Length: 80
Ligand SMILES: [Zn+2]
Image 1 (tube, rainbow, N blue to C red):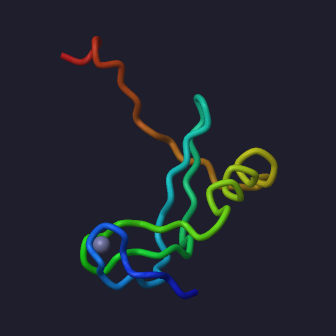
Image 2: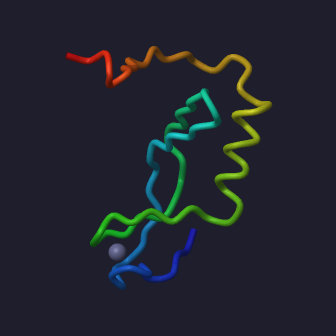
């Protein structure tokens, strides 16, 4: 995949496989090894085309058999 220079700092944007967290209401999804553009200088992320929509669709319909993670959650008022 080819990316334009970073809009923030003008740095070189290269494809990298990263972990993407996606939240839909009360549900939280984690996608591993997603190929996106990442600025080598400032770390800004660039999601090609309708990428987030596609991940959203997967979260809604395509995750039969997905691994389940256990995530700690806190309500601040109850944390001492
Ligand atoms: Zn940058």
